[in-house]
Every structure is written in C-alpha cells, then in structure tokens.
Image 1: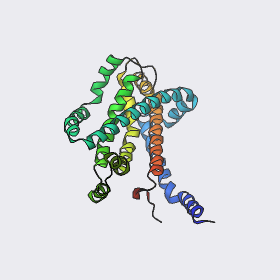
Image 2: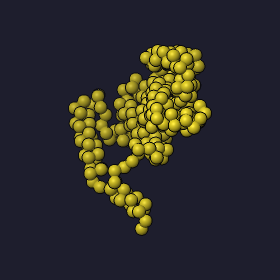
Image 3: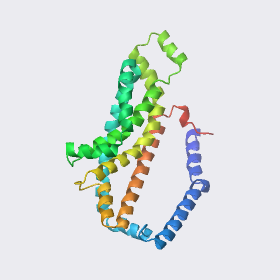
Image 4: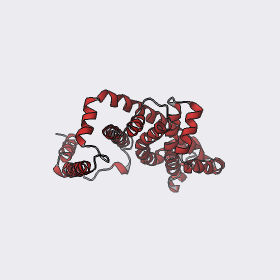
Length: 267
C-alpha cells in the first residue's frame, strides 16, 4: 500500500478513537439531563425534550419549508455582503485616498444597530426577501471587509520587494501575491459570518411583521402563542443550520488552503 492511502487510513481510524467522540457524547448527555431536570421543575421556561422531538418528527415538512426560506435569505445576504466587502477591500488596499474616505463611513455603519435599520428597510422594500437579504448583507459585510483589508496589507516587505525587482505589474502583485496572502484572513472571517448570516436572516424576519415564512417567523408566532415546544424546535433547526454552514466553510477552507501552513497536520 502506498504512503498516501496508508496515511488516509490512519486518519480515518484515528477519527474513530474514543478520545474524539466520547467527550462530545458525555457533554450532550449531561446537557440533556440538566435540560430534563429544569424542564420538569419549570415547564413554562423549557419544554420537555420529547415534546421538541415530537414537533420535529410529526411536522418535518413544516420545519424544512421554513428552514429553506431562512437559509435562502442567509445565503443570498452572505453572498452579497461578502462580494461587496471583498471588492471594497481590494479598492481600499490599493488606494489610500479611498481608504481615508470610506473607512470612517464603514465604521459608522458597523456601529449602527442593524435591528434599528431593519424596520425601515421593510417599510422601504416591503415584506419580500429583499430587505432580509440587505439586513443579512449588512451584518456579514464588516467582518469580511476588515479581515480582507488586513490580509491584503499583510504581505511581507521582502516578498513584495522581489515582485518589484522583477517589475511585476500592480495587477500581478494583487492577484499573485496579495490575494493569496489574504485568503487565510478571508476564511477566518467566513468562519464567523457563515453562521452569523443565519442570525441576520432571523433578525430580518423578526422585523418583518407581515412575513409568512422563515424560522424567525415561526419563533415569533409560536412565542406569542406560548408554544415553547415549537419555539425550541425552530431553534434546534437554526442550530443545526449554523453548524452545517460552519462545517461547509471549514471543508472549503481545507480544500482551498491546502498549501497553507495553517492546514498542516502534525504527523
């Protein structure tokens, strides 16, 4: 057997070792016990785990449909916010004038509570998907922008001097040196904003009083009707959605940055 498959087999076997999954199982079991005790003592604070499970098992189509609506809003907002942030970051890194002009405005936008902006967006754009996408884009924009700017400007001066010595064009320096150097910073931001995009979609759904779909709407309506089992079933869907998105970006990072030292595994 060649060294490559042998290493892959060792990694797969190592992943099944009890030290990897036993702590997680123990933590989940302990959390379930605590939940059950609190739910029995305070039924108006936490529903029984069985009631939450019944909601998910008896109405899977209902939760899948609303989860799909929230996921669509989250991904569209994430795409719009990340693309705009990356494009602006490139402009800022290449132009000092643009950096001095735009960064203060971006900081002001970032410190403005999105929850305060969301109702105005609903009034301006209606109860459709557009205001929800805008809110999600605003929430995901700033982390991607700042990390990308930092990454684009983190090139080591000796390496930059080598490019200048061979008379590389500004475009070559950008795409062959600055962008690869920025990718670890970009993925660091994406680890944050992928799950955060779900939060943005939920905030937007809470603000859109006339919304008819989405897990945020499910939580809002169920809360007003004191349906705790439905509220926590929707929260469980959101937690699963955020976890899957985080896993996706981790796998994508491992594939794209396979050459980077951050992805090296100890032998």
